[in-house]
Image (cartoon, rainbow, N blue to C red; front, top):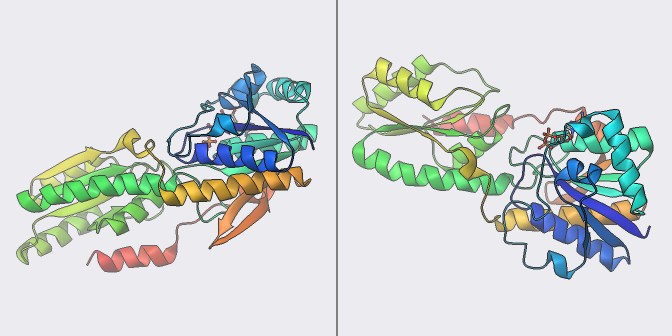
Length: 320
Ligand code: ADP
C-alpha cells in the first residue's frame, strides 16, 4: 500500500484530532502517504482532498472537534453517491480509507467494502459510547467529565439553597453518559432510557430524605429518558419542594479532550492505520479492558452495546 485516505464523519467528538494525527504519523512511519477529506463522506464526493503530512497534524492534539471538519451526507446514503465517492478515492490512488466516526459512519464504511471491495478500517468516535466492540469510543470520557464539572458546580448551589436540581445530559437512545456522570457526581437518581423508573417513588424518597434533614438532591436524566422540565414540574407538584432544571446540551460535546481520550485516540488511530496497511479490511478497532482489539464491522454493527448491570446496581445502592 502506498496511499490511504482518512475522514471524520457524523457527530464530532473530542479526541478525533488525536486520532487523525495518529493515523497520519503511523502511516508515514510505514512509508505510506495520507490524504484527508474535509466534511466526511460529503467531502469525498465533492473531492475536498487535503494531503496530510506529519507537520499538518502538529499542534492539534489538544483541540476538540476535528480539523477535517465533519458532516452528514445524504448523497452518500444513495448507491450513486457511494459510487461517486469510490471514484474520487480511486482517482487519488487511495488503496484504503480510515473512517473515524459513530455508528452511521461505520455503516457507510462497511458499504464501501461490501459494494465496491474498497478496503476500510473504522475508528469509534462518539461521545455517546454506544458502539459495540469497544469498551470506550473516542470522546466519551471528555463528555462525561464536562457533564461532571457541571454537576459538581450545581451541587454547591443545590446544597447551599437546599434545592432539587434536575440536570439533563446527552443520550437520545442510551444512558451511558448519564450513568457515568451520575455515579461520579453522586446523583440521588439517574434516569436513563434503558431502565423503567417511577417518578412517584423518587418523590417519596425525596420527602423521606427531607425528614432526615437532607433537603438537596441532584437528579440526572438522559435526554432520551425524559425532559428535565417535565421532571422538574412533576417533582414540584408532588413534593411541594422547589426544583430547578439545567439542560447541558452541546457544552458536553466540545472542549479539549481528556488525557484518556487523547491516548485512546492515538492508540486506536495508529492501530487502524497499521491494520489497513497490513491488508486487513472491514474492521473496527477498539479496546477491551486495557488491550487493543479489532472486530469485523459486520459484528460491531449487528450487536447492541448494553449498559453495564453492575454499574446500574451500584447506582441504585449509592442513591439510598
Ligand atoms: P454517526 O456516525 O455519528 O452515527 P450519522 O448516523 O449521521 O452519524 O452518520 C454519518 C454519515 O454516515 C451519514 O450522513 C451518511 O452519509 C453515512 N451513513 C450513515 N448510515 C449509513 C448507511 N446505512 N449506509 C451508508 N451510509 C451511511
